[in-house]
Image: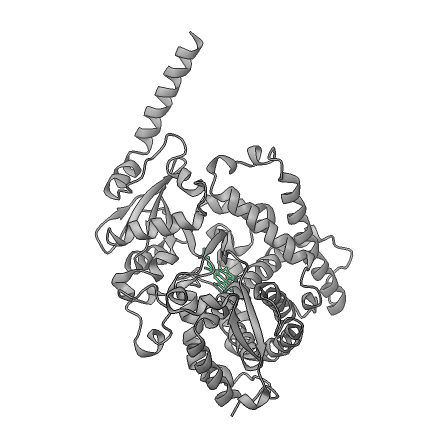
Length: 487
Ligand code: HEM
């Protein structure tokens, strides 16, 4: 008798759910996705297939979208996501839907209402306060620090040059953290003194655990996740990161000794803590991933690396001369190389938005309130209708010889009013550090076989850890250059 009642209740709940979501269900039928949709979990099973990384599913979604005018949809648990790999549709969504999807609540235990994932009402005033920090004049003054920290990195790399393969990411991420902390907060945390810096390890751990949780909708409710065996490690990572930022705030507060009350507990500075965390976390690994992918690609394309080296020598002189603010705009080929690398390997491969009001796309399709949108940056950047049949190939010249077909065709830093605040900052920082490494070292692939024409054209193997990373942790080899090479 009991099970019959349960069955009836379930059937009633299901019918009510279908009625309430009838517009969303109708939309899903207009945007087919040819994979089995299971009860309760929808297509989430695709993200946890044995032997596959979640990034393979984002790639699959991109390919399916490319076959259907750049757009498809998938069910993730009980939520429908429209998967967009077309810049025209992305342009409309990113300009009109500023609210982030609830799936981003997963990072709240760490950054609370930090602007990057905050509701629009909290985000808007905070963005107004933060934006002036990234004015061109301020950024120009940062280049001295980028160069100083890059030179420290180049020195550190002497210990691995001419030896076995190693992870360039482990080094660049320490550069990136030192640069962020010194430029945005005026503190020197000397992460470069310790490539196993606990903060970087904790952030890495947090990203890995969040990515694993992200793809399993049944682990999203905090009431479930707290019973997971590794939950205590997750809490430890969050606490370590918060403590690190609190320490910076306290040190800085004491240093400037203004009307700041040094006895105030960090929790009273919640907004400051949240935004400092956003700055350190949004800026450190993203730039390090971007610079590391670029170096991996240059290792596989020695001809392109040589062109970059010649340009740096021509614009900046030999490695005894510092790289200066005025040099960066003249490093046009390097700029194209970095952009092409960000196109093929966007550090943030997917971003999400929530539709709150009916939104009609240029194709005439109307997205209904309640639906999530996954902007598949990977898919937009590799859309053959936009980038041509050679969309998967590394060809920096495409950023020099032609203009973008649509401004949203290239969006590693997101797009629209809620795009990345650190866009210019990141480009300047990455160009400075890559130029400093290349003028001192020749970058070689981890294995010589990677240089044969087939291997060098193949996609790099990647994995999803909120950010997209290289499966082998960005391994390369370095060979010291002689100063006389710069002629
Ligand atoms: C290659 C490096 C970087 C990449 C690929 C990147 C990418 C992104 C993306 C995709 C978003 C938007 C997410 C969304 O729309 O949902 C974002 C937001 C943001 N990024 Fe970056 N970022 C990079 C570097 C930086 C740096 C260096 C900083 C700071 C110094 C920074 C600060 C921010 C902030 C504050 C936001 C939130 C903006 C807002 O919501 O108003 N980013 N970034």
